[in-house]
Image (cartoon, rainbow, N blue to C red):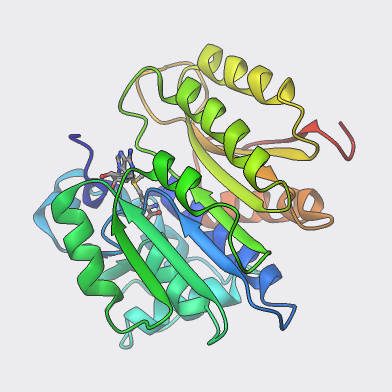
Length: 285
Ligand code: SAM
């Protein structure tokens, strides 16, 4: 396990992931009844963008720092609020006094209400310990030093009966997509009512085609694929974009992302402006 998220925190793909995550949480908050969230690959939860590892790649410069200096993007109010929470001295429209970037578990924790709950899993021992420290102020969260795939078997179905499963692995091994497809099938069989958000990197297309084919053949009823592409796919040794598989997404979420992604491309001033949104199964599929 070599992957450390601090090198990538706040990059374009991270921002897109957390924007989508925030919209899904806002949707869950529309009903009073409690919801649960399972974050299978949680990271440390909190990233200091002045840390030398973040500075070494400076990936946040093209990501969150671009977004901060762009005119506010409609639909992102909740995301901006969470950012402000961790950077109280920061004001919209500028990147000044912005230093701390919240990862998925901290972002979720901020958006939980008293009746909701988060289970966050992280396999790297030091990162799990760091996450535990970050989560201490949030009573409704649990941190487990545990394999995220195994956690899907251990925790699903969530007792709240509604909620979100975020699966965001590091894609360090060539078999990650195969492992993921199998894990998604099993998780869905345990909890078909759940809302699932599975993030993936867009690098090599053949691996993604196989992944999509496996999911389309899985029998899972409603699967939306949403990709945000920011480099032309002429090279496969870099992150050209990112994608989500959304199982049981909110009604008209495809339309919402079709409107939002071009605005995000504008705000991030991306080199390439690709948006691929299609149903692998269900709805229009
Ligand atoms: N979800 C985080 C966020 O958005 O802020 C970022 C997660 S990062 C992409 C992937 C994380 O998964 C890393 O922190 C890595 O240590 C952890 N990891 C790797 N293999 C794992 C496994 N089998 N189970 C749980 N965590 C794992």
